[in-house]
Image (cartoon, rainbow over all chains, first blue to last red):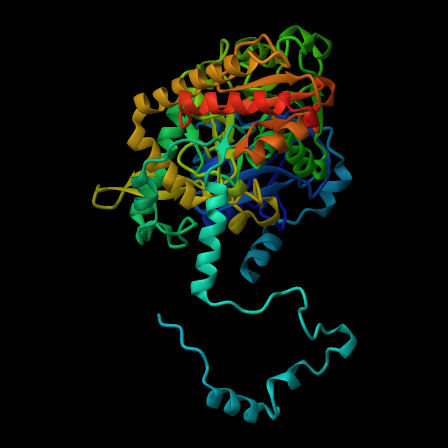
Length: 129
Length: 457
């Protein structure tokens, strides 16, 4: 059974999004996504300062069997990336919603948050797969 | 599995089932005006025995030629055992196997090859080979742009002293991917790139600098200074090397203060015959940091569930069968059979054997240059040190001289006029360990006779 916290927003492409108090948003991939990929061996993160639009491929999560793109869920600028993933990509497997976060967006266009889905809708979307 | 052709009876039965009178009827929909009814340019049939005889007679015409052309493909002695072993049934496949791990022997061989290439080039990882030297340079250029996170320009500097064919292929492969390739001019006195000439690019956004060693003229480049310049300007240093020369020259991993980042080249000198221009193979090695940007297959060593050592294809997740259009490369054919030959060739020669091949080739070329420049109408062009090729200048156009030499059974070198008209009547010559002192004298005598002939003025 997938762990899908109710306080986060989601995309159908399996990213989770957390709105922080300062208006920035933190992004990772869901428990379901890490489970499908299997043990992660490498994570490629974007450069800080990259300006991204929703749906743009901006990171790569690589397991022994597949390399998948992570898509920007919102419009914004990368202000921080999780450097710990360089040496410990398995953090995404172990704690996808905490230490396994991938990147943080600043200057977020909050209109683009409206496109995200809630945990119930995400659960329904993965049950359809 | 035996090959059984259809009998006339079977063909009749099949036609009867689909309701056709004869095979010709299957092509009815092709209008008559589009059909070629007779192939007038094809001569009448000859038997296998006759063909064999014709081929032997024609081979005799080729076989006597003394070859002094290098220019990217080099005639070296290949021990008979190399191809005897390579063509055994167990190895005789051009491909890395599809059920890779079922072919442990092939994987082990590729692993040994990768290890040898890493040792020769001073790098951490090697892939299982690429199509040829030219496409390996293009892949290295694309790889540098992906790997250099400090550069956003997609701009690469390429030495004008790199093989002109390689430069054409790099331009061709990279043009659709937004890369900008700028050529560095060659010093017309030394025959290489002067590191100071890079000053005008200082502080600019450059993804990589492509450095040949030795260069197309056989001249040694100042690789330490060029590598350091690249790193000081946040560019990656890409080495394009002759693997045989590395037995004498410094491994790219030791160039400058930090060493080159990516190394590539053509593996032909390692046990692959000239064979009218191919097939050859390309090699590509790099530092561990860039392994995930490296195209092609990689074989790794591991242990199975019982702890026994074994070999496996590794880092496949970025290849085209998984990543489709977003793969690191979609054209990175590898050349398994030629890699097999190269691996056996290197293991038979050993480090010392390879060093002697390199040394002997270097000496023979020196002797060839000395013998030819004794002729008044021939002089050397560059003063820089060279490996096993050199540029000579004639007092007249090169092409007719080469043609006259060919009539005397000698391939006298490579005419540089097409690629480097600014060098005048320049000729690139090469002598490897396959040439004896007597061969060199034969060559010099022929040059003297041809140059004395008023018809080749």
